[in-house]
Image (tube, rainbow, N blue to C red; front, top):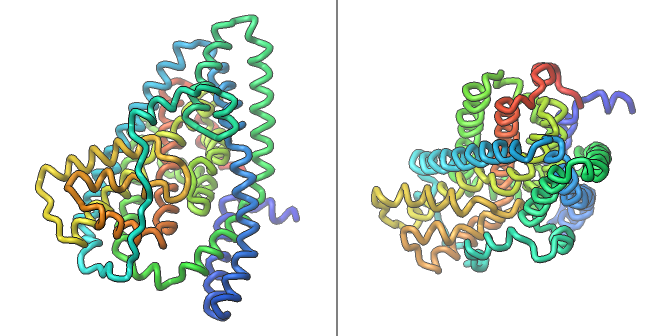
Length: 422
């Protein structure tokens, strides 16, 4: 099996993705619907196992690597500079994402001529008020937050605990060394789990391709093109610009070296599930040191949702075009600001963006019935769109971590410019 491990991980993941899509389509075309659904559900079990393994490791990975990363800084003041720089970059890229999304909505006009007659209204529930979301950052019980996987609360507690270890000086060193060792152990577990990625991707994509089919894709072709083209433009222009202009680094090497994380993001549709791979890829291939990778990336997986912001802008215009709402000039900046703000802190799980759609559509007073109809129309094939949104999010996390590491002198440029490892 040595030949298998000599193939780069991203290439193995891509192979699993292509073969999974081909297998799913072949099964759906050659078998009756009931038998095909049963077979694809069994194949998907492999993908579900992979996702469960990833989710199993996300919370301990964030907790241990974030505490270890802060401890590795050696100075609480450094945390402030890194955190502020990362936060500003995340916010800036989110607004650019929404502007590009609005541009794609204007250019592609995906809602023009769309027949929503076959769509069933679907209520997604009320989004959590902003005040409650902010208050929820502070956990009443940090152990409960760890058990429940409340990532914002876990990050908040980990940050404070890491700062506490730094302020404890010599007395905090034994605990600091423990977290450094534990984070290394968790990363090694991640490497083991990631060897299953090609098989997990095969199962997930086979089920998606076989159950959704080509017909669903063609029914929303313009909307899909708008999202995918906008996503590629955002990654190339905005993230490429960050790497080339702000960090003065080769752009091609950045995109080449994060393919592992992008492939897993595309197949899982979950920024949180991809976080272990993102940390591994950014550390090993891009040369970002632990003090930055362990602090910036978990933060990005929680608040950096550029793909969601871009998508909400496109869907807002899609809704206006489909139902004939007249948008005035003042509506466009309001849509951009609202989509950018509500996307921050979106749960890093599939289709979470749909929960926020009603807030954005309220900007131009879309009726609840029309909002429910739009969600009902999009929901069956949202996975196809969510896959690309997640790639944007993960790529943005890696880009910001790289730029901040370069600014802070925490980037090993020899590693960045070298050929990527597995």
